[in-house]
Length: 462
Image (cartoon, rainbow, N blue to C red; front, top):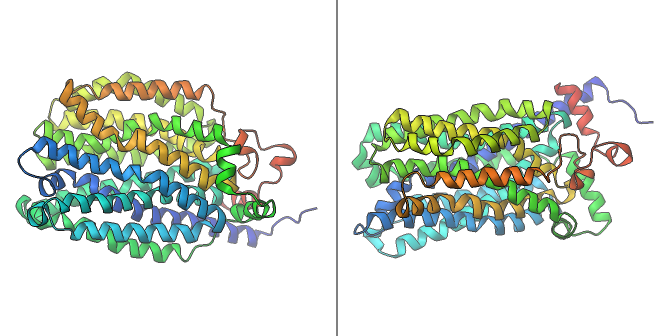
């Protein structure tokens, strides 16, 4: 008979779990601060790293390099996922944040097209590839680390916090660039001020690295990894051969998860400035305020997902986004602050509803011993198709059809979401270590193998 943990050990375990949540959140903030700095400076990069003779081609070229960063994510997800499942979460999470810091700092120091010609966009491309490679390992690693540290009845809540943290860098950068432009002026910002966020990102990476090196792997992972090693199983092979249904589900769930977000929060700012002629600060403020709502809504909805399940929220989000897509683009295309804000908000709400259920589901579909590998591979592939190319496809649709055409992408994403949800199990009660791969409830002998960390941390944190 297992001895019941003492109150003292309960409290210690709870503090340890909360420390892991904090450590995962801080590191994630730094990593995404570095990655999204490119997106919020894209209009300026288009001016500086491409010939001035064709502004439209310069914008599309900048967006293409933005997309290339996502092309590298599957490779990063596979490489770092395999290493993370084999050697531990913390070592790999430390490595990816160091790599991101180096690449981001390098972009901030690059000479422009006026100085070195075609070499400027080529070097920008190289360092963006390195950023993407790093992010492929970061996202799945941080989410795996946190969900394996969380109490079983708070997994959606904790993952929602980490997702909200990925939004915060966009807000900090948005308001920060508005303030920076106001202090130094637009001319100085275009000349040298744009470099400051990249250099700051490199410095923050040093802080994130220091914090992560003070953490330890969750007991959930340590126990599952011992079983995998004893069975002499390759984690990546386990994910591909034994968990391919989870790989496919995660890939398809990323359509509604990412398209509404990358259209509404990433691309619309460039659209407002480059195509609608809005003042940059006005467009950035409208877009940033809408993005802030995601950081507020997702943690609240994550708590609801722990109570009612993941699928009700995903169903609501999928239906909602198909209804509001065209009205949202119509409002943005009024080229007014309130129209841009309202349209961006509609897309932000769609993102919040679907993401609050989908992000945690995508992790719970994999077993602990191969989660980093499986999630890294499928999430990386999905972000290439549904994330990285959303801005450039949206821009091409606007040029070829009309300013509202990108709304069709959101409608299609919602429909895909509704279809795949018909074949996706509810994962709220699965056991992470074993039954999650099949979507089975955490009951019976298999469910009982769940790490005792869940019960201990739940009693300490509830």
